[in-house]
Image 1 (cartoon, rainbow, N blue to C red):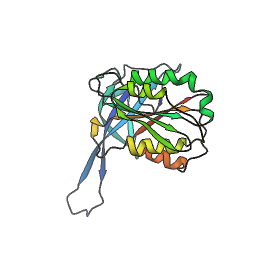
Image 2 (image 1 turned 180 degrees about the vertical axis):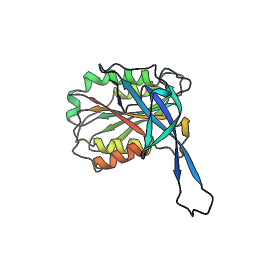
Image 3 (image 1 turned 90 degrees about the horizontal axis):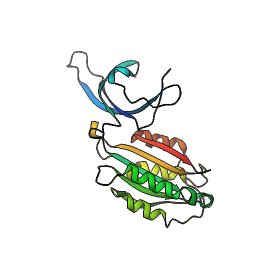
Image 4 (image 1 turned 135 degrees about the horizontal axis):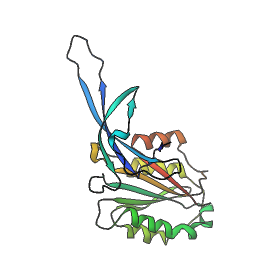
Length: 222
């Protein structure tokens, strides 16, 4: 029994969808065609990733109608994969200090893995406490992220939802949709999951994450 989950690391499916405009039946029919990227991963019943799938293994419907899958790119096909944009969101609240030493090095290691030297992938670092701070702007050099992790200070409350909102709208929003070349957008949150200082609601955060096609991963420090 196979199952699917919506994370971004395994495959990248691009589908062709059509949207009809309401017009006079006597006039010419006009159709707007959009290419939409759909990030997916597939596991078997034991949770093992399946990486040898083809387009024929997938079926996608929109509003009850099946749509064409134009492209399928695997995570192992790095030359054809869209570039990665990844944001690391680190808990800087008072409670965050209790765990920071144990996961600080792991964040740096992950940054070097996801933003390899000389590649097309880029990332940034944000910290959240009572406010949200951009600690390292978008860069293709993971060293800047790793170096900044050494000097992070903790204190105050936790505005986790505000941090996700800002990451989606200020760092990962595209000025213009790039079709199949649209970057893969990922946020990695490193914290305990508590939020007591955000102005944004969960519904607002979910909306902007979906609007800008951002996948959110959470790594618990508890």
